[in-house]
Length: 261
Image (cartoon, rainbow, N blue to C red):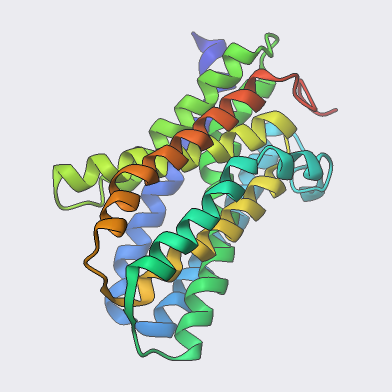
């Protein structure tokens, strides 16, 4: 039991850091809005990410941050992200082309701070929190099997889905958020567990979040049967494809097994 706790202590740190992050965010949010809030939120994410990187280095006995964030196996991380790349054309066609009836009138600072600064910081912070801390226990084990990789990816699914679901006001929306964000968490985890490259997961998180957050600026939606079918049914088909791709790469022989020396 003690050995289990020691290997998976990162999951506890994930919960602690996330709880602290939400507490600080709730304190700051009433004082800012618009582009100012996105910038403050971005800085908070970066500061928490840097702090978590330092703690993660201590836990895993890394001497340099480049031993955690590096380009080794990055190209294989992009290959393992094929399910996410396939999802993006669906996102663009469904929500930008078919779904958007009218776009909000906004400013360039708001768009840039929301879609670039905040999403860059989110990819950095969330991947350290929900993938590095949650999944690193796999690399501390003697048994680096496909079954164990699936278990850690499933844990990432659960944790990532739950922390996004608890923000919701209704059970129906919470279940939807749990499934959708959990699926993305599983996909990011499969990239990390296949390559042991957190930078690849960070990049994909940042890149996909840009597209996923653009609909925030849609003011009015088209009331069409096509949008209903795509959003309510085909959407889950593409999420299923992401899960299947993730399982495939989790089952494959990973590009790195065991802890780094």
